[in-house]
Amino acid sequence: MIDLTISTIQETINSLRPGEKGIIGNFAVEKIPLKLQEMGCLPGNEVQLIQLAPFRDPLFLNINGNNLAIRRETADLIEITKVL
Image 1 (cartoon, one colour):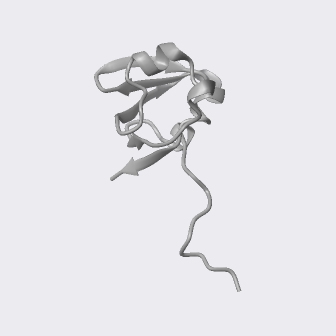
Image 2 (cartoon, one colour):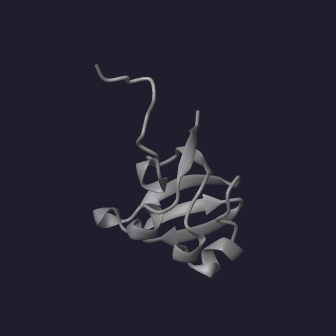
């Protein structure tokens, strides 16, 4: 029997829909560009998906008041917890 109460799938920034928010969790520091970290892409900060470009790449985000565009590959590396 499969226990469905424990989720092994971690949500990432890619799982956000336009307008949704999340709190940044863990990510591999060495894989995220330093420039993103300097602009506030750090664990505990709030991220909101503002808009998706055609073909869903890049993603336009607001992180602590900073508007950023990041690639899908990078967004897949940043875990979040969705805010309701």
